[in-house]
Image (tube, rainbow, N blue to C red; front, side, top):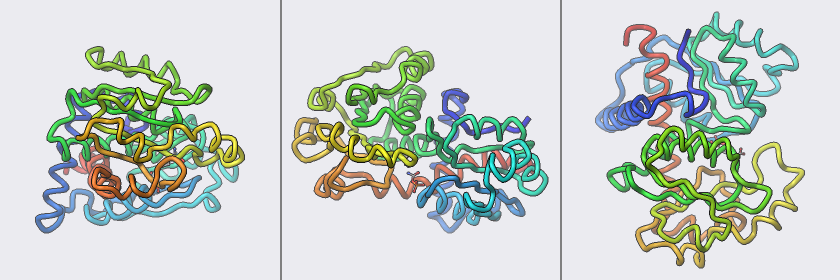
Amino acid sequence: MPRNFLDLADWTSVDLQGLLQLAQQLKCEWRDGGNRPLLAGQTLGMIFQKASLRTRVSFEVGMKHLGGHAIMLGADEVGLGQRESVADVARVLSGMVQGIMARVYAHSDVVELAHWASVPVINGLSDDRHPCQALSDMLTINEHFGRTDGLRLCYLGDGNNIAASLALACAHFGLHFTVSSPEGYALDEEVLAGAEKINARIDIGLQSDPALAVAGADILYTDTWVSMGQEAETEERRQVFRPWQLNAALLGKAPSQAVVMHDLPAYRGKEITDDVADGDRSLIFPQAANRLHAQKAILVELMGKRCGA
Ligand code: CP
Ligand code: NVA
């Protein structure tokens, strides 16, 4: 059975910490002149049911840097589960590529792909999880603070895929996690219980008042109020989430060392203001760039060993 990267809950903390070290090594190696061709001759098939900039570019460029290449398979080409069943797509691709990365709506689709594929499957975002982003964010946090253990991350906004994977990443990497969301948009209790199960030593808390939530935080993290697939709820969500906007006033309530993170794309003037996104406490662009290095680590870990690399 190939190893997959679908949800951080499936991985041990030790293995994820190993992946982070590998990402750091690959980043240094690349800066020192280029990566070794650990994935020479290998192809990654990338299925996208939703739009992407960072995920698509980081995986495609990552494969290229490692000596392989990637094929983009857009929503209109594959028709995952519509033109062709998920099981058939998985089995066909397994005969032609050495890894599959999929960005889907239903999380069950990426799980089903992994069930039927005989090559590793990577979740490039589902409605419920975004593990590649959260692993990459741990790289950014570790680079900025020199550690992850004992830091305090406060997530502001929708209890969505980003919030869920961050909660699990915080547990694996020893960060205390506070989430602040409007009523009706809270992170699943099951996710919080899963995070507690991973690491009982960290504080995991819900704080409905954003001003109280940011007090004591080292990292303030936000995401869009309207995820892909929720466009019909845009106006309602913008009204409900307004008090959770990450702006100068809210940042002023956090400790002076606190940094700002956002997975992007950012809806400026909505969940985050320009002055905060572009301010000297923002990590958002180094954070985006680190997707490349974290994605390479996942690719090498899942695909590299298959050919004795
Ligand atoms: N953060 C992130 O996954 O960006 P894309 O949607 O552009 O891939
Ligand atoms: N929560 C957002 C993340 C985008 C990277 C979405 O699912 O659209």
